Image (cartoon, rainbow, N blue to C red; front, side, top):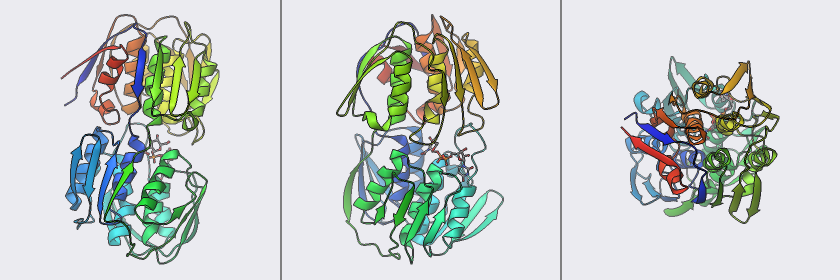
Length: 421
Ligand code: UD1
């Protein structure tokens, strides 16, 4: 179902919100349950489209899954296939992680080039070249990629710190004959969370969070618990999205279950724009200002830099921020698709190559707009809350891929937003 959001703008958001578990942790962790057959209770797992798509793939591979509130219980002991069919794979790019976990479990994996957001070509050459360097044989036939063999271990260096490739290779190396060192890794907190999961499952992985990760090869017989519990890291991107909505509407809110230290770059940018932020324990309190100021130039970068997944939301805020803002998108090549939709609401944005130049005005007006990808769609919802009058955001299924009941969460903060078919 495509779905639409109907929004009445102009209400400052106020109240309290508990941040949910991270999509970008839940997906690799779910894939990692394949590495070793056991029963995994994964708590704080967001109920979102991408997680349901991963669940469907796990079931196809032979796992049993069920939900108890926000906990997904995955029994991966029955996994007996190593091919991920094209139709399931095309639903979600993150299914590429299954290459690593299936190799760890079965010594063979067949996948199709993954689907995902409309934000660029998103190649998987770094994944494939890393697997080859670890000793796996790769055969590519149009969209189908077959990979088999045993990891021989050794030291490899990624040409770019890709998040997905780091996670995939961490898993592929688990069943190695020798130990593996991966250099120039991505350092995102979600990679540390995957390491935490793998260690709880009995594997020996060290160094996540730094640019060098060490994986002890266990052959294919890793001892570990028959049953285990794991709590997913909080979603720093969901937190930043709600905080942007609070910022853009001149509101004030308290966020629970979020650590400021994993989203410092975003919080500092909000402070430059005039917000007053208090950080304590697992809580962040944010108070916006009457008129936002431009943060100047913001460049998206790998962690700990400003996250590309928060760029569309920031762009929306800058449409009403006093002054000129330049946002330089350094991670994905076509991640400005929300620009034309924001323009329908009166935003003044010019795109010059990797740069978006945004001239802050005093109002946005409600309009009918279309979500074209996950974060761009969330940015339009924020714009609707900031605008004068009514906004319709069409194709909300993109948003539901990555946010659990965004409309409900925003309503708890006082936002006027309804969903209809
Ligand atoms: C992950 C996140 C996504 C986030 C992105 C960057 C998950 C499920 N998704 O995506 O939300 O936006 O990190 O923080 O965790 N690249 C190549 N070749 C490769 C792999 C990547 O050229 O083999 C390029 C990509 O096209 C992109 C850049 O590297 O331009 C970053 O990609 P990567 O870090 O791999 O992002 P994902 O893991 O896909």
